[in-house]
Image (tube, rainbow, N blue to C red):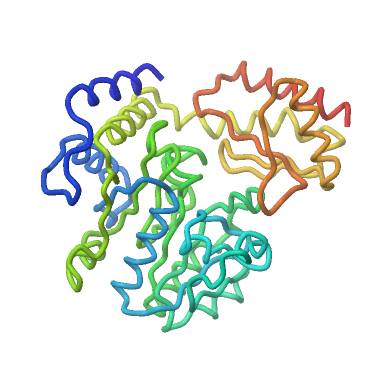
Length: 343
């Protein structure tokens, strides 16, 4: 995107990395943090910049433990949050075991519950520091929340005094048809993790929370969480330029229509068992892993780049740039159908 490239070039010409521990106020960080905070639902009003999604998850887990004084962490089965120790610890078992087994022991006092299982919410107790969840499960194969589930999860956390963390690393920045999926589904967490599109193509992440929660990292100990390159000014300039582009060109408002068009053009193919979707994040279910792997070969021949999901190898992913045109949606859907015809 020319606007993002220009922002990177201009900021790199001014200054790049400045200081390690935030001794100096850097304009790109302040401008981007202020813009994002103005768009997040209240009372989330404070951002801590990091370098990646996994690091955002690590910071959010530390913040929850520090603020609550508790140790138990609750995650969701078939969740993916990153490859660092804490993020990997929160990958739900048993599906995550193939990645976790070689690196044990991981974090203690972690349990997993089933996403969309209302009865399992009782396992969140007054020992629980936080619950970490994707508002739409990504690597599980695009699993949106059941009606009322996120509201029930929010209520249970409030009842026992646990913090609710949303991982919006995949769903944030417009992917689901709202700037943040929490806005689409009407539930506000205590902490949200952002990355991927958040950097506009540069390495950048953040965890955001109300200032009264975020301030817990300032004392006992001081420097409770620090980062050398988190919030790099060039990355913040890129992220701000990308966000400004989304807002100025009303990109997010068009996402739901484009996602629905994909669904309309593909759902009646006899090889398609189901389409699960939230905005422009789609899983096209074929129902069989062998057919899925064959589909990947056909896609490669047709010049289509796609993949399946870490915890779902029977469906392929459609996750195009949000700026995709209606013509490009139709053209790519035609190519997909031609590949489906050859299965």
